[in-house]
Amino acid sequence: MKIQKFFQYAYLFFAVLFTYEAITAWDTDRNRSYMMLLIAALAVFMFFFRRRFAKKIEEQRRKQ
Image 1 (cartoon, rainbow, N blue to C red):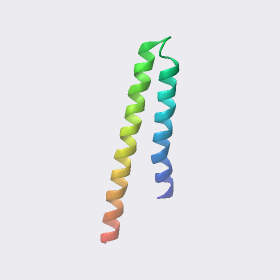
Image 2: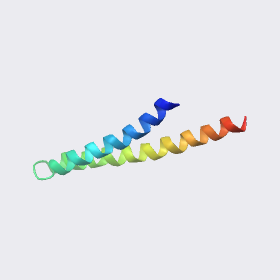
Image 3: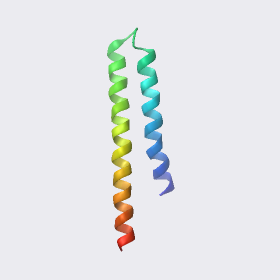
Image 4: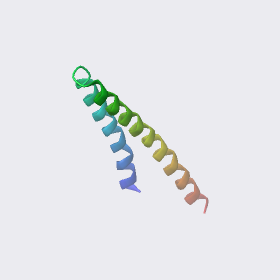
C-alpha cells in the first residue's frame, strides 16, 4: 500500500514538471506546450482518480 501512495504523488510531480516544461517552451513551440499542458492535466486527473480508487478499496477491506 505504501508504494501506491508514492505513485499517487508521483503523478503530481510529473504534472508540475510538464507544466514547467510547457511554460518554458511557450514562445518557441506552442504545439509542444499544448501537448505538455494536456499531459499535465491528465496527470492531475490520474492523481485524483487513483486516490479515490485507493480509498474505495481501503474502505472495502475495513468492512470485511
